[in-house]
Image (cartoon, rainbow, N blue to C red; front, side, top):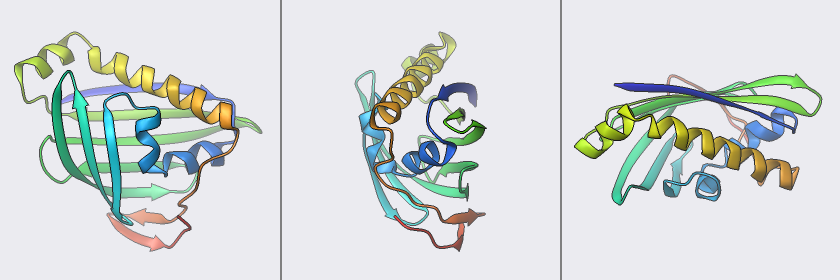
Length: 159
């Protein structure tokens, strides 16, 4: 499995950054390789991606979600991937968004891209676009503040 870690400081309150990240269907607005995300239920997502001309669809499950702290997920099928986004409160209107990803490149092109650190560059660029998106808005497009533990919703939240 390949892994990466990237971070960006965002000039909004931690709750604003977290709330926006829970709006999974907005990912295509700042994630270049994501064509669409459909939230199937409280812990299931369907992704459609296109990276370097390779289109993929897969389902992912949210394993952990703690408001203003973290969101973790794993793919249910191929392409195998898992990740965690954490949110650090750095002050009244400042937070850090940290992304950790692990994935299994399937094709020769994907393995070459991983070796050349193209994936790190993509995630870093996506985080900069997220920063620009949420700072320009100043407010999230919605929020889902439920707590999820081991894939089960502990406490319901607003969508």
